[in-house]
Image (tube, rainbow, N blue to C red; front, side, top):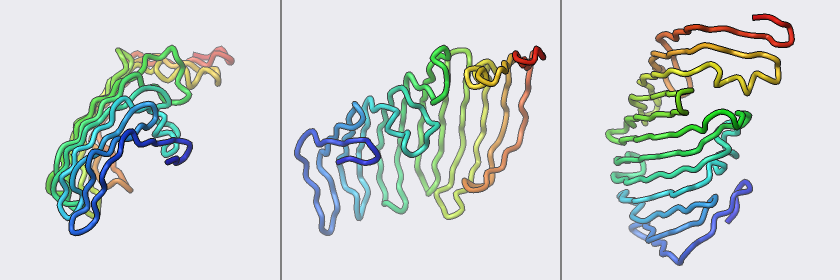
Length: 212
């Protein structure tokens, strides 16, 4: 099968059952230079184990163009409950991630994330880091109810020079370090940010104009 320039190929025969129960037995796909496996019951009760191993991050590009264009992603999911009210644990790891338009001189980023689904709420704990240049953590809850309410804490620190590969073409250069201590409320459609961002030893240089 092919979707948006990405091909998925079956690695082995598998069984898909329809009837009082919908289930899949040992589906194994080759996808984006990695593999994805799914096995278990889907309906009426959810009892699924799924994995993704070493899938290229380019698989996300057709959906969000600014997401990493380099690196590898792996994930596991063990889900129970029902499709309308899933429960379980999802973990994800990313290594060697690099977003589009970011220079190769910037250290690739790593992602480690864990999501617990329970009582129509996703409890998230995630960290993104790129050496000493960037560290960002997100922790809290996202409601799966109709309002998709957010209750998240956002903490981070990083060097502003991380952005220079994006600004150099405009003749600008940033220096300094920023720290974040913020909360995210509201909903997915209308997030509300509060908290503070602290800048230390900050400087902006406009090379072409000789300004600093």
